[in-house]
Length: 379
Image (cartoon, rainbow, N blue to C red; front, top):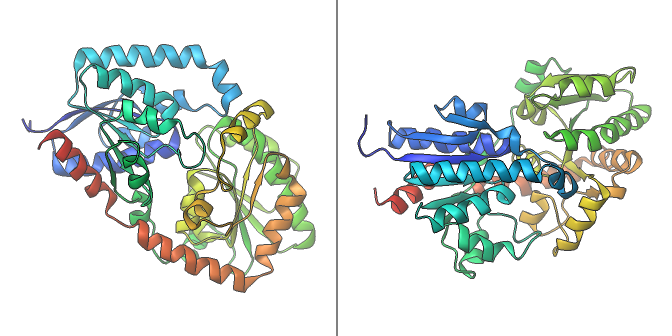
């Protein structure tokens, strides 16, 4: 056993957090082969040797109204986890995204003398300005995925390091479209639309029926269209029920969202981390979101900039359409997808803009993050 290897605790919520944390764990293992990490995580973290005390899907809650229904269970989990970590005293706690869960846990651990890192700056620049002050009380250091974030946090007294985005290191600069279509069994000559209605049950329930209805509308005008829908873990049966009897030329696959994005011409996609993945694959997209109306009203009041999708936030412009809540009708979704398909020069211009962003986000994220952690640990 490597005596210098740190003992870490981590909490990653949902599939995107599991993916980010797995890249970080791989880099930590390369630096300290004897590193140990435990807490809340998913299957990709387990593949890196992570000791799961609770699965990450326990944190997958969609919207504020839904969160209220799960509040007692999540609070109990956070209290139990916090007490266990204060007793075991790891060298460092790393909260991966999931700010509504992690920031409160980090504040308790920090006040108890456990050093804390938050990996992924909460979107203080998009929704809740008050989170910056809360972050200062919770995290000793923040690992930021986007270049504009450290300066913003430092104005609030929060130490931060820009580490780039790990997906920018993993996703190739030139998307392997032909190989992806061959792997999925999609025809070469037909246009392909990828439907990505999210990974959480609430997202799928709200968005998948709208996406499927939009696909039917598109097919009426464009009979050569083909569709691919990557099912998130645990969502396949629900999606199969929605698709039954629809008669769509649609390929439903388990996971494989990167292959779907590489293969498609346009994607109809839920707002969230997947939009960044679509941007890195240089894909035109139509961003959509829909949730419980009460949750939407609460969130919309907190919003203080015009963009929600990460590509638009990074570009500071509406480079791709966003159709949110009532605007996310099947008719509007189909219309915006059709506009992309009818305008190849617009698609090429977007490809060039996204390629520039891809290069900006390439920073060997895993190594930069482990360097920051090593500095914080004094190793």
